[in-house]
Length: 428
Image (cartoon, rainbow, N blue to C red; front, side, top):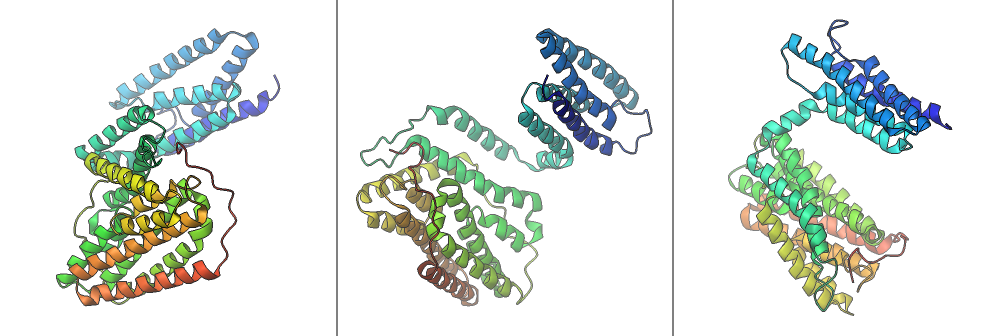
């Protein structure tokens, strides 16, 4: 049986990896006080590999089934005795042992990559007990319900939606619209989780940077209100400027995921703008103390109503953009600039989905940059309309500097040669 030794070595390694986590957690227990430690889990993985090898050699799957049943019975019996002695109730050790045995068998069955990945994932989940339990204590029912509904709609509804454009201009593709809606919400949820984990008590800096992943305009509005109430405007302006940089970085992440070729046109300009905003924001922060409390927690980006609203807006803008840009890239660019004032994600995604369909990489890159500039202008309007001059003037200066340096980089630096653009999945 060629390659059996490396396969058994992987099975043993998986068991030792899981056993390392289990043994470390119970490292203070005296010898003989626990059912399984690093050695037992290592042997369990090796045993699963040996039983699978014997099953293959004898061409008898029943050998593996019988081995798994016997292993489960023995491990469960010992765990029951340990639980009775300690007065505890936990099936984690048994489940982990079964997982190690099965992964060991999978290693010898010819699925080494899957087995190695499964072993790493199993050890990571076991080591994340405190984090996962803490998250369960902090999560609210509304957040859980929204996530469950979203998961159901994504897993059940998404495959049932038409995967083709249903309008004459090829702009409204229901499956694509919903996919991008979920993608945007998932990226925004990273910022939301950061705020939920750190809380607003860490100050406007942490809350602002994390909240910018959801909405930099909302962060700017909250900081402007704080400045209008008498807060130190310089650090508040710095937090708002850094939030603007995070927002641009988030949009860059969306572009990198959906259509990385566009970064060959707009990437250096975006990088120059981000660097300028980061430097200006950090400089503003040094001119005063940041307030201790943020204004409020950001809205859950997985809230179903907000998602449906985003999807409807995205569908409308995508259809209009496709209609006005049919044979006319200028129409798409103008639509992105107008829409970006209100929602940069909708504007950028509407432009990206036309890549390779009715617009080339250069035109889409222009549309993305104009959407970012328009969104920055919208933030300035909010800041000027809500906060004092000493708050929005530094933001305006940083924004103008970022736009100028970004434009200079766009004109003077070479565009990267990316692979030829291809139509977005599902586009017609």
